Length: 603
Ligand code: ADP
Ligand code: ZN
Image (tube, rainbow, N blue to C red):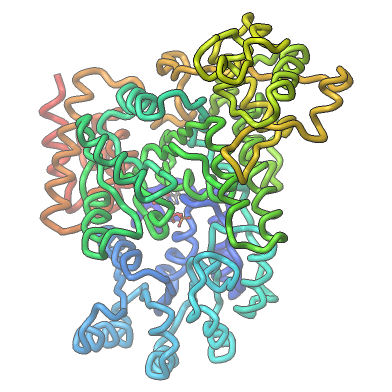
């Protein structure tokens, strides 16, 4: 379709964008579920451009609205928003534009659209469609619940002939049913995309020295990139951010303990500057539309695969290669199990939380394709290995660990079932240190029977025994290990036990393993120094333009677009116009400047 090319500079529709657009143009309602970065916005933007009248978009966050409207205007689309940040006079102006047919898209906050005056206004202008973005905000059980979303069913009553779309990335079946019921979308066609984010490379590294591991990862693979580092607590965030700054990384802390102004400033720098790293608790993320987040690192284990998927999903919205990096160790398993057990929640809730944590641990411990485990958890089949996760790229071997497991379990038993892994390993490897002597553990039968393994290998064994529930952690006390039901068949030799061979140190980025299999991503991996120079020059130009116009750099051009320019080295406006992400308006506004820069790098 010409509109896609002209306004957005894209060649093809993605996934079922085309089907949704045709369905809506035909007057139908739709529930659209696509993963983050899937391209939901085009589903309502294009019909609004094609039909006379205004597409009305309901969006929960003011910051998000301003971003989207800013980006649309850059593409020459007539968009505006009405929210509490506008003065009465500015609202009047927007209303006039809407009435006189000078607007294609109008963004509104839910509380605003529910006012009688707004509903009256909408009944006086031709509304092409209602798009309810982040539709999972109607769910009272979800963490993004917005009470005003519940009132949106009024749209069905007041505007029965206007197509309505509900869009979200949250796809579990209960939320889906809730959206349908609360928004009166019983007759809507459902468009549900798979969960896969093929450009994200999942990697779980065994925790050894997490700071160092992160540093190596960033220095080898993400120099100058923007990303998010998630930590479990505010204190850890503060400490980590300080440490990263001391190492020379442009890192900023973000958590609910910081005052509003600091948080706003940090978020703004993250969005507006190139290469900023946000160190954050889970409080950071909702409404972060930044497409060029190149990595999401977790230094602490998330509590569930839902949380992990959502947080890692903030990487690589632009479809270019991105990394999800997690460090994980026995201490995470112990700590999170303790947190659940020590919480005030009902037993029923604790059980659910334990089960969720188990799935998260299973993902970390798997020796199979991580993507397959992750998607399988959400009910998506991924029939083959993905070739873009650590276990696919560096296959994990497993080894028969029955005898070793028996040694470990008997050592737990002989020492009285109250010591942690560090002490047990000292006993097994025959270290007659002070603590071992104090308890007389140099005299027991398991002293020194495990010298065939190194301390690190034993740590891996204990972690896997705990993760696999062959050993229980004393959650009330000091986290000592004790036997449980599942230990018995192992001790009796009736239950085979296999351990994965951990890769402890972060491997150097492997030259042979291409990032995601897109043309653009490949060009990213193989820049010559001349291309590197052009890339940097284009980035500075973009930053300048962004500052002039007070918009985030990615609103001027996406990284993907700059990469394509570097690869194609266009000489004419016509050639430049064929690059993805260069629509008519951007060609006119920035085309000459881009060509000038490119010509300076042609040799
Ligand atoms: P979502 O709202 O589903 O998270 P967006 O609508 O913000 O995703 O789109 C994610 C990114 O993908 C945006 O940068 C958008 O410009 C880009 N995109 C969307 N559709 C296409 C397409 N058909 N071709 C290329 N890029 C696209
Ligand atoms: Zn894989």
